[in-house]
Image (cartoon, rainbow, N blue to C red):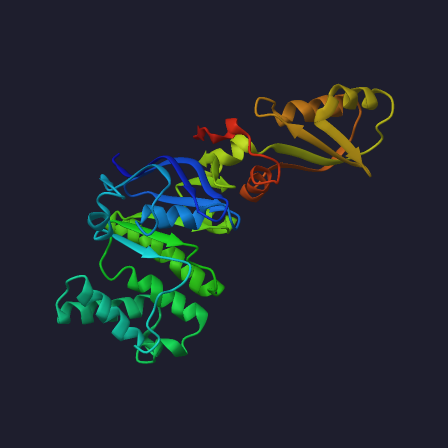
Length: 319
């Protein structure tokens, strides 16, 4: 599988501010949906601005579609689509005029630009506001138009910086469907930044978790859960006296009992059935038994806690 984006030891330090990126490295495969997941201030937007040639890195190398983003910026920008957090739209033009203008700027004939505009207006549910000035649009409607504008010329790579911020749930789902369709129909590579766990899990083939300008973990959503999460068995217990206490003691630090609810942390190499059998053999009656693996949200909160990131977590994990 070919590589669409390759980033090595990327750093960015602003003259009058903190270091935004501190040694970010990642690879995005052609046709992949890749998510940069992080809290506000983690470095997501700075990364997108560098990858699209809008900001120069302090150090490090970035290749997009085989070209260096610093020395061959225009070549790259002719082949990508970008939607940033702040929509850059002319408030005086109508929605349709914006899309037609973008089409003409990228070299389309008038007829083709108008046809493409109509197609995108329909796809993003903008037909009813197509002839209104953009300045009259709500925030969510402006967002949909901005994303549509980035797709006038079907790009090889689509960069979306927190694209669903401000969208209602129905519009958010529609955009998810469109992103998946673009990958399915056009083989498009998508790099998506988000702070929504549900969004990353629904769309991304792989995720890089950014924290204070560093990649602290990367892999598929399921691999991240396995590598950085935990499994827990919970159950209500009966009398824990006598042999039952000894059985619980043998679980050492893997278990705790609070108000009659037993929680046992299960390492990957320990079968839940073995624990249940041992407890029941010791005379501990178990009810309401449940085995739960940490969600991606649990993992994300653990990885982006306020303590310094663990260097060992930077390795890629796979299923």
